[in-house]
Length: 477
Ligand SMILES: *Cc1c(COP(=O)(O)O)cnc(C)c1O
Image (cartoon, rainbow, N blue to C red; front, side, top):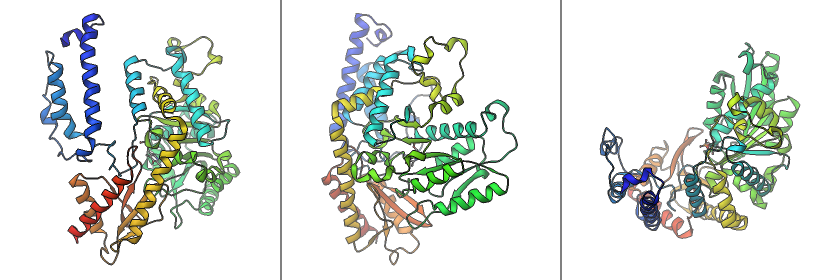
């Protein structure tokens, strides 16, 4: 029967029907059973490679046999990001509407590189980015585009900053021997350093600015570095600030950084990859101050807005700088009406583009913004429950004040002066598979991060997990 799958005729569609309904049923079971799986996959490196033959099947395998392989060879190798006891990293959330949107986008299978290759993909993307902008309260003149990841958005920002600062000379003539400087905080995401490297600035020209007791960039230190770089003949080019750093959720003083970027003529890129979603709540509206001095901004609906990977929203104040940096149009890509529509291929690095806005639109339509906000608020409230529990626990201590829905803690230093037991505790918990946490090191202090932000996490999952942490502590000490 599977041989018919390469034909779009009655038989081919019947085979596809069997396949597609089996896959949907498999997914329904998956979501029904998800809490019974270990959150972090328990396999060892190479275990799975052995299960897949060295050459692809020459003749087709039946649909039921392939589904059995899915259970036996695939499922054990999945780390379940949609498990409600996933508290590691930052979440990579899906929701049922977003899954359905991705199913449709993959079913239609359009490649949406420019307007005419599927006009609705472009115009829906424009509208969905306006919706997000409105929801987060971003400046209304900013224009957005969907990128695959925040890392790509930050690279795009630094490439644009490079061209803007060099008057578009570097893309023509290469680097001119001048040293362009990029500034960010010591707590910035590693994607900033990667972008500095890839954009050709050289990591030596990335200046990591000290942070204060809240792990936020200190503007006076930034200004001192800019001034000394100027007098040494460097060219201060861009500053990358963060709302919600990865280790602890720290928030840089965006307004003060905007003042400096304006005064010294720097490109100001704001990385709000995770915590940007919180801007939709009134209680975080104050974080928007200083946005008028921001040149580019990124946040990831694929982390905390229930629109699954990949979906990263990148906004720019002046799209012309971006499109001048990115546009290359060989004759086979020339379109008519070029001034009347957007070609998003000119707003980023890849030419080919998926129809990503479909899942955004489906999610907005089927959930509504009120319930999205409500869920984000619930996640923050769950984090307050975790915070209170840590504060009252006789063996644990908060490493930093809670930020958004991120709580960072460790065993009290009289119990664990070197931090080794805290690391062991995290490893033990993750190996048992009941829940998933992340260990990190900040200012030489080992700590465990717990982010209560998975789409389907509720208070019972959190309570159960706290009891489990307690049990593992007793076991360890
Ligand atoms: C997650 C994260 C990133 C990287 O996001 P990708 O979309 O995976 O590239 C960058 N910056 C911050 C602050 C993040 O939290």
